[in-house]
Length: 89
Image (cartoon, rainbow, N blue to C red; front, side, top):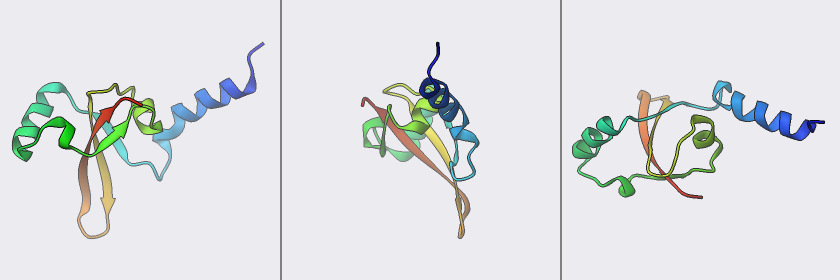
């Protein structure tokens, strides 16, 4: 008999991206990561980190070594894009 806890945890991880306070996010393809890092003159580990266990990273299916692109709303700039490097944990 399935427990209610497992059902609700699956449901919550699936719906996290639909919540109004969670910004739109996506995993960046490897080729695009190379271009972004060249523009920023940075190595992947120099980007701000996000743990693979973070609810946002888990809901995207991100693995350590991936880069996540996050679209955030800004009062002054309208929308900004930030990147996060996925680390283990």
